[in-house]
Image (tube, rainbow, N blue to C red; front, side, top):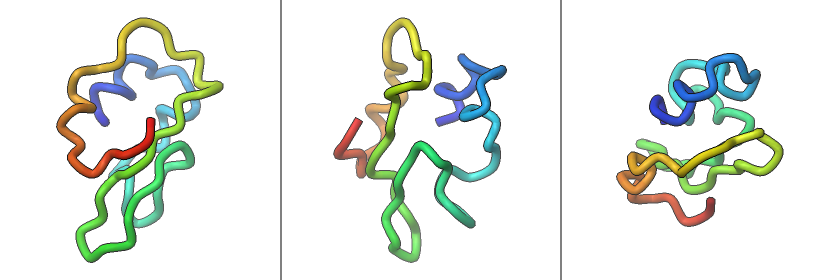
Length: 66
């Protein structure tokens, strides 16, 4: 997720900081409620994202919705 937000440092959604799941999920991601939460959904619409999707997102084994 760090590679994703580092591409857009001036965007409000990229400045939420900290862990994307704990203590509360970032506004544009959803995480599981397991003891060790896994990110399962990322909402990119309305984020003014350009270019390719970072390959690092393929390492999110719990991701089911983009």
